[in-house]
Image 1 (tube, one colour):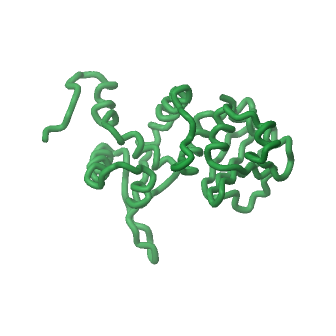
Image 2: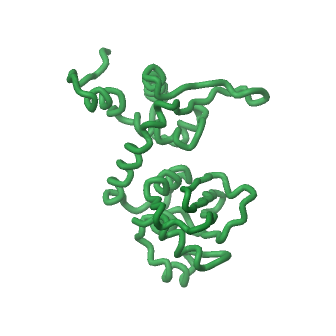
Length: 216
């Protein structure tokens, strides 16, 4: 089947020839968190067919957006990752994520989004002007899913695996839909703390500082 193209001598049209197909930008989204195995990509993109994922990765590789390499032993697994050119897409993807906030419905209770998607949302919302004067770490916990956020005047980092050696100012817990609603500003935090849907362990003021760093 011939490749679909807008056939226009326009940089936007050329970008959409590559990135405008279904699933392509979501593949890119999955790789913002770092190198991923093929199976990791499948888990992060439920509903995509194996052949389609392979085709999307092939096109992104050919365009120099995605590269692949083999991890050293004992892992010896093939992983996919964004190239320097692929990283150039981050501002555009984050702008699209911000645009989509008003379109975002409630997080489904039966199949909540993974922590990596919450990490992308945090990247889209970060406001350096609202960050603490000194770097501060907050850990969001939803069962076994953990996302650590460290924000300060020089920027922020998101670690979907946890806080590492950093001592968090607070651990903020709840189920995934509650944490999503907290981040996107749809949650009455006081009411959620009172009825137990949300919990804060550590400095209670950390919740206020975190929300200031990620305003909606």
